[in-house]
Image (cartoon, rainbow, N blue to C red; front, top):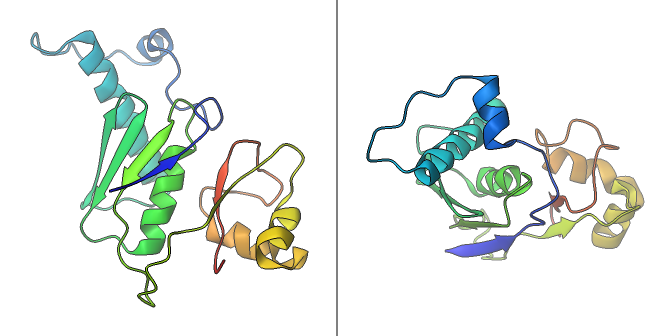
Length: 167
């Protein structure tokens, strides 16, 4: 299983605090054998699953597990592009430091690892495209490769990881 590192303190705030979660919606009482830590982990996994579903990246064969600040992504039927997007979707959540997953073989059987780029302060998609693809005008290729996680080419932030297509 491969491991990808993410900036734990950057990304979409999905989990909130335990207190905020309790105020937002009453949580069902955990079974007596569940510890508070297990209940918190279950809450976070549910939030991750909801985010993945909202992005349209889920199927009945996608399973997420959380171990501390590491998400384990398992899927038997997702293609490589979908798995790369799943890795980024859960990794770019504030509080997540690592994502573990097995990637299916590339369609061309090259076996190449995906190219991910961590956005630095002041970078634009054009600058990233010039660096990785040799042409700033290919910024839309990067934008499209990261949909639905990106809603607009200008909405990137430092610490965010992006897929670089064809690099």
